[in-house]
Length: 217
Length: 217
DNA sequence: TACTATTTTTAGACTTATCTAAATTTATTT
DNA sequence: AAATAAATTTAGATAAGTCTAAAAATAGTA
Image 1 (cartoon, chains in turn yellow, brown, cyan, green):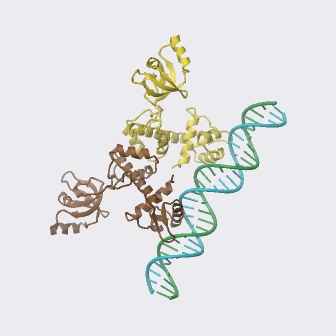
Image 2 (tube, chains in turn cyan, purple, blue, green; image 1 turned 45 degrees about the horizontal axis):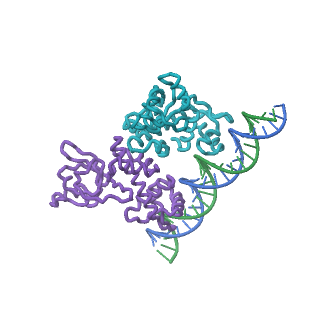
Image 3 (cartoon, each protein chain N blue to C red; image 1 turned 90 degrees about the vertical axis):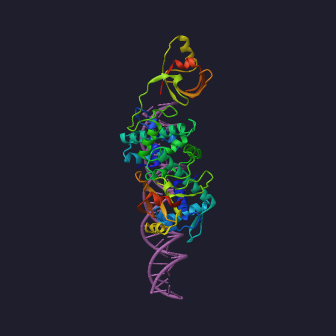
């Protein structure tokens, strides 16, 4: 059984290393966890002994298979709890993180699986991030028009379904490119337009435009 | 904000001191928390400084108003989570304790109140123990026939609704007296009879008898 | 390449919560 | 009341996780 601190380190390394399981620097971990590099070095040594990370002095850290499994499992719990808070307890999607941060450390596999069932095996959390299943597999994502995303959800621009020059020029003006991260902030019932955050910046987009931007979660 | 260890001490003292807020011995706390008396002394000193307990060397410990409030709040969370686990996640009433023991330490008043609402403001947990409301008040309990208790619930015998000698004699044989603690283990559909635990011992009781034993939760 | 800046690690200290063993106080028994 | 037993506290040690300050290694630059 792992401690809370260990779990937070594994989660941080997972987050920083991305899908390629890249090596992560000591400093990066320190920044992510708002702690000092020396503390990170200490903990990394402990995690190395436990077989959760690969570590070479001065050369960064990466997750072992075992460490990866644990990290994914914590992410799974975090995101399932977020769904619970929003769908069942009527939290707003932007106020669940801190509570989920605590709930993700509760230890009971029965709890996780029953919660998953209770929620209907959701594939994405309220922020649009994918939820791994109990085997640690992430859902395969398909592209969909931006207009179909629900409030709070986010994704990456992977294409457009119309390629006339004036449309593409307009996207350029909105600073929307392939790979841009978009999150839906608000949907206006009145005209079906939506408010989105693009690379951190808020903008308004008409339904006509939103229909033609393809998103992958 | 209090640590997990502090919360567990306050909860233990609350449990041991009962409604009269009696003074609790160092050893009793050590037994309850499966720790050593010396550890208890250390922690009690810390809790005294924080104003959560009254403590005189060699003379036991009792909760202050502040300490009592915290303890009741933890009990509230514990029992609400137990209701959630049984009612929503289909846990059995006898397998929720360890998980609730973890969940009770999650810090978010919004979470507690929304959970309470989601559950419909339950008054008793799956073991029949009363759930304090958000002001820390316990539900006033009324007596009801034993037959009305649902599985897992428990209460104290506070009377009988029939006082013929042979009935009372029979109760005596079952070792049921005023004040006996009874918990419903199982209900047999076939003949409405019930299996109960009386002062820790399992027995079978006919529906006729169960109708005439009055219980307070 | 050599110097400087940055990153990372080490060494030693601190806090929290725990423990064992010994000392002290209170309770019980003869 | 004195002797013994039990409960409680103190003193000192330990483990986890963190910190600061200094040392060592790596990276960047003139």
